[in-house]
Image (cartoon, rainbow, N blue to C red):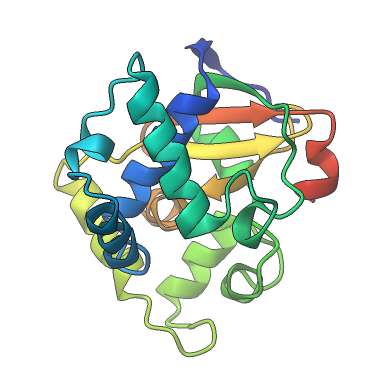
Length: 202
């Protein structure tokens, strides 16, 4: 059973939103859309790269951005049926614990992992040259190499009803890159728990 090695402290919805957006800013898939929405809102990337969580206006702007791009707080897209009352903490996971985190129940991640939704299984399939829906695996390999070179990634965002059964909300590529290099370090994350999360993070 997975238990968190070290809880670093309490977090918040505002920190989760800022962390989520900063993680997606560097994403090949989501980064450009995020930059377009930033420009349309007249905001600079610093809103995401250097968040001031004590600034209520900036927090509101980030929540609005996550709503526009991913449906946060609007019960749609990624956040459809997502619980409204979530307790957030900052934590470190050991290698064994991080390996137990599952992907979201989304067709691509199910296929990539051979049905298990486990990053270690996805990593094994990537090493074997297997693709999900013929999507290239190079981004995972590139991220793993970047980590080996010393690059450090933003925290993963994980959710669950409890801390012993967690699903990745944001950071699937980074989680897979960690798996490709064998989880050599503790993994920093934000963990969101809620009694209603069990129905969402199956």
